[in-house]
Image 1: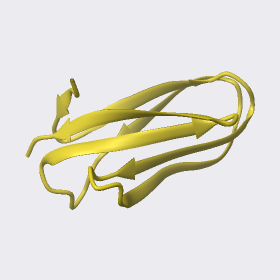
Image 2: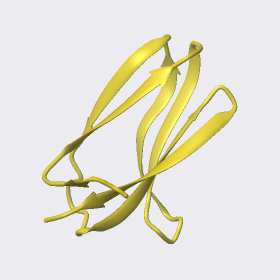
Image 3: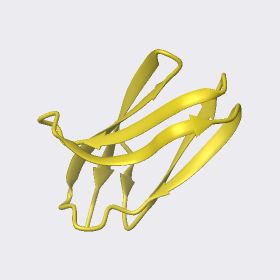
Amino acid sequence: APNPFNPSTTIRFVVGRAGRVDLRLYDLQGRELAVLVSGDMEVGPKELVFEPRGLPSGIYLYRLSANGKSRSRKMALLK
C-alpha cells in the first residue's frame, strides 16, 4: 500500500552502477506529470525530496529507470 504524504515525501533509491537514471511521475492513467531526475548518477544511495506543487490529492506512480531496469511504486498525496 502506498504511504500517504503531505506536503512532501522523500524518495530513496540506490544506484548500483553509474549511468543514466530517470525518475518520472505518472498519474494512474499513465500520463507523465513530471521528470524528477534525468541524467547521469554515480553509484550509491540517493534521496530526492518531492514536493508536489499544484497536484490534487490522489494516488500517483513514480517509475525509476536505471541500467536497463525499471521499477514503479505508488504514493498517495493527501492535502
